[in-house]
Image (cartoon, rainbow over all chains, first blue to last red; front, side, top):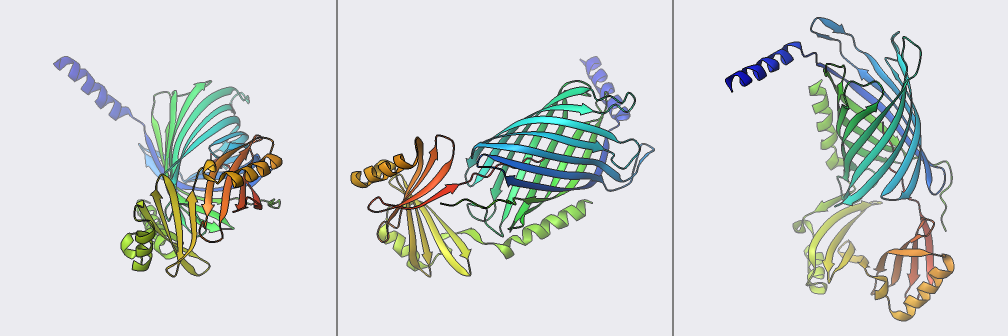
Amino acid sequence: MKKTSLIIGLLLVCNIAFSQDLTFYGFLPAFNQTGRISKKFNYNLFVSTTIDAFDEKINGVEYPATDLQFYLQPSIIYVYSPNLNFAGSYTYQRNNPFNGNFVNEHRLWQQVIFSLPISSGRLTNRFRFEERFIENRVTGEYPLSTRARYQVGFNIPLQGRTLDKHEFYFDTYNEFYFSLTGAKNATYSENWTYAGCGYDLGKMGRLELGYLFQVVVRNAQQDLRFLNLAQVMWITNFNFTKKKKE
Amino acid sequence: MNKIITSLTLIFLTSLTVFGQEKRISKKNVSMKVQNFIQTNYPNAKRLRFYEEKDRGQTFIECEFKLDKAEYSLKFLADSLVETEISIEFSDIPTNEQQIIKANLDSLFTKYKVLECQEVNPKTNSLYEINIKTKSGNYFELFYDKSGNLVKKTEIFVKPVPSQF
């Protein structure tokens, strides 16, 4: 028993000693526009950039502040009912966009969102399947890898039963990322946790400010990268067609 | 960094009280006149909830409660009742009017499902508000007068859940 405890203890000490977990702090400005194409179909455009805002020196290695990622996601949403939405997208992602070591990614995904009203809030379940084509800078090829994601979220108006103009709301979610096929560091490879408050601007949409915590398995040794982000998102719902009223 | 996030969050939450348009209020913040009205007319009301709603410079008091399995919503302006909504079953509508409304719905839609039914201002300018979903998955809100005549028909566009990341 003592021997086993000693071995476990040694393993833990070794793990702490050689662990190369990295922690960064930054900002994530984002824009999210949704508009109606027809009664059932909507489009969505989501654009964001992830900025590591501070220079860090970890274990003698310098990590200068930089733009980590540019993300462009147009998608088409099919509204089956208020509680059931389907969507599909082509997404472009560029990691380290302004550095020489940038990596491009082309991605296709399909998703279903099932939501339920709870009290005056709404619980959402989002399942997404992704086909990722990540650039290999050595070969210049884009090998296919797949990933499944599950997000559970909850949003609720903070003033009254419905979100009206000039009112606040609360939004939170946790998303689990599972790398299925292709190059991967772990199956459960990423986890994002978010909590934020939003304000309804009326015609100008909504403005949301929150804290996003991303955990990524960054190598085969299962070392992690923690990213603490202040997320600012402008959410609009501009429709360029007239509302049909009878 | 943590200080910045904390400060921003605090500023954001503090401003809640400044811009509020609708908020839940406790019974003690509701005038005795409104409380007495509810007590007199709906003595068996259960699960009472009060809201203060500001709209175009006017302050409304809204009271929601349950009574005999139906949901009631009463709206007051300056202590006077301005609107009453009662959730009812479609079958609760008197048979004659029910048949007229059904005939109208049948003429408008080939196949539909009644999702929600409300009686609006039953003691004054009474209307029936009916929400339906059609076979093709479209949503409509229809208003009928006490005789079952269609007053207004509006198509409801369901908003999608926007995709982030």
